[in-house]
Length: 301
Image (cartoon, rainbow, N blue to C red):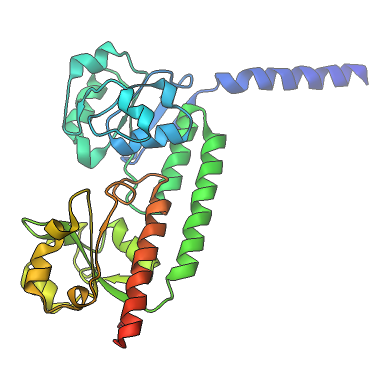
């Protein structure tokens, strides 16, 4: 009896010792499997969203280098810069001796990523491109950094908020939305962009959702023809300068109802856990437009 008990206790002790020594493996968004022998202690982040995800996992103190626009959370602003999203100081990166580099495929580009791998740096690419991909990406990052338990808790909270907002708003009367990405040339969201999905979850309808890709160039005439009831954009400028062209043109319900709204620049733009906060704000402003349309007597469809 005592011998069997001693054997089991020894086995449990060996398992407890081996667990932190086990290699950490995860597959990134390019299909590349990355393996680390131990949790990384010196991490470089090459995109604002990967910096934010690291802080979400409590790993901010391990981040030794970031890109120019990694400004959230505030402590990230004090971390040394290693370049912009599309150009980096390779010597500075190597001097920081990272044991993990987080990259952004479409922002950094394959040439930069391949160059870093030539120096035997473990590069993990994260580019969640849907609202539901964010928590899944966080869990994979948690697995690679030894913080999977925390990642799963955070991911579960995000999924719960996403489901609550979707249930609350998605079946309400639709609102026709034009989302202005850029002014000159005039750019909008197409059907494959996750913000188009966010608009739909709020009961809105992106009037250019039928276009393929993530963004598309459109003409003023095309916008006027689709008669949006609301025009959205994101940024820190003055709303009048962003939407002045539409007020000058007139002839669309969004101007008549004064539903031209400038959203905060980052909460929807970065695929991080803050997306659900941005979705909450988005749903509230779309619901405000819905109320104005209802009071006007116009049908939303």
